[in-house]
Image (tube, rainbow, N blue to C red; front, side, top):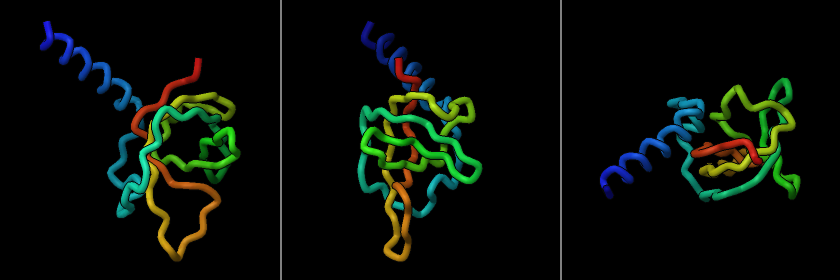
Amino acid sequence: MRALLLIFGLFVCGKSVSKLNQTSDCWEGRDTVQKIIDQEGVINREPNQVAIVLSSSKKLFPCNLPDSYQSGDSVLFFADQKEIFPNERWEGRPVELTHIELKK
């Protein structure tokens, strides 16, 4: 029974990740500086950028947001926040999503 639950758990976890755009160069060369867990936000798609805007108005820039998410969608997500190099200035933070779902 435990083995069956473990296999089911792995299958479910795998499904949530498989919906993400898997890219080999998702913020390549940047270390993870923080894990973001169980965060709420709103998708904001503009012609030259895609962001998840938090309630604090902070912006996160995911490199692997699925195309099925549209501007205005409220989401719940987990992500790895990536480093910003000392010579860079960003309007927000680069992130790699590990899980995302529409907020109910």
